[in-house]
View 1 (cartoon, rainbow, N blue to C red):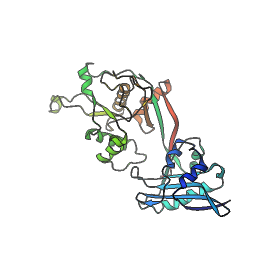
View 2 (cartoon, rainbow, N blue to C red):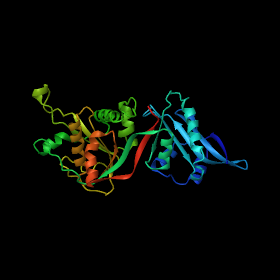
View 3 (cartoon, helix red, strand yellow):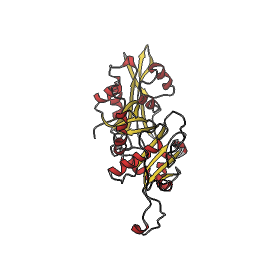
View 4 (cartoon, helix red, strand yellow):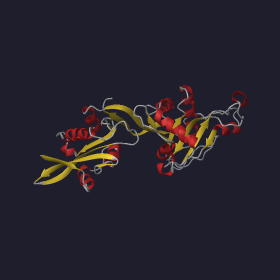
Length: 334
């Protein structure tokens, strides 16, 4: 077998698709979209391996490494080899070539990371290459009515209205908390500096798919204890952002309409300055509300401590389940 290596060219995606077939994992399907011509803005290097037969090269493998504006402390890398060309050293050679390119990245960053599914050939290849897990992610579908509805203040409608609020996704207050929460739960792979505008683009504007948001507030501040008007809103303690038809069950009394049986994708988080008990209570109360009559789907990283303490008992009791397979983020050693 004669193998030649070259840069990515137009048409390679179609040629490789014929050889590779469908992606073996969700992660592979996502990373195939990053295979593209090399360039410097953003910085990317993409290499193709050809099996040369009678002077004609047939693409059988490809690899890419590129910088990321979000989580800039590592480079994303991906290698895929046709099934009938594996265990012949192509993947290892391509990874070595990617590392050579990474050493010349203009950012000075050279550590690689990738996403794999446990128990797959990709995970085994990553482990053999020295990449170790730094995070586990699960998509969790929470069934309707998994938790008892919370009681706010004296249990009146006005008390609930004071603490549970529909908030515009353009809110600067919401953007601030969402950005700080995202940074706090990604200490294992820093997202870098997140401005309010960046948070809007990533999580809250129309292009992000955000449809609506509800927030949980602390009880109104006391005019006597703080020297401010008693009508001042309490601090924002938790948020739930929907990325579908809206958040079901979002009324303060939990009386949302039951709609489609398809789960609504929700980003659920809390003010990162809360202590552990407060954070757990905030996400627990919001989850009880938004999943009261309709299933919701959450992306759960192991680093999301408060959310894990609420969701994992639901998984154990059968009131929630993992959809699809787990995803591991694997990385070069620190």
